[in-house]
Length: 230
Ligand SMILES: N[C@@H](CCC(=O)N[C@@H](CS)C(=O)NCC(=O)O)C(=O)O
Image 1 (spheres, helix red, strand yellow):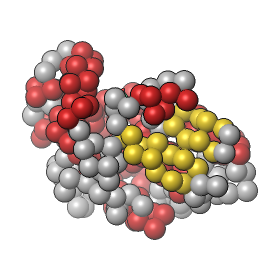
Image 2 (tube, protein in one colour):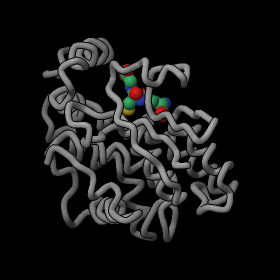
Image 3 (tube, protein in one colour):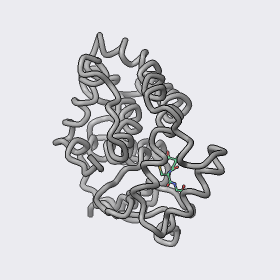
């Protein structure tokens, strides 16, 4: 039976934009697992109440429910050891764990101000007040003022990717010759921005752009073919 995968959407159920959900989606594709997307909106807490909390990603694999993108990746690795590894063994897991913390503390915060107002604009009417209230409380200012100058934000994001750029001068992916979960994690916030904004994030000549395009084509074009506002 296909794994049920709850994915955040806006008014249009086909624009599935959540960065944490993209981590899981890429991981499911990497493991070559069948999954069924169940579109979910911010205020539909009752729909995922069975998971004991109110956030996505949530997966249901037969009788097993798993929440949190990191815990889901660990679950998939252990439950499907014969499928392509997400971590590349124990030493690999340590490296991927570092990327997890780097993305959560550096890349995600660099992307969020560029994304939030775009997210609000594509939300269903019923989610807009909830999103505005929770995100304005988190950032301490009106949604419209969170981004400030997008050019400055993009410049900061480009700089934040410096260590990845250095690595990509030696290899095609953070994982080496092929993507690992480290690539999925670094890619997911950029896919978030692709879904909800029209900004050009990297120059064509940037190694990050070439890697981004490889990630968009990976797994049969899963991310590249996804519907966005573009
Ligand atoms: N640490 C969690 C974070 C999950 C999370 O924050 N999900 C967001 C979507 S990206 C969500 O569902 N938010 C619901 C809300 O804010 O009410 C993970 O990595 O899965």
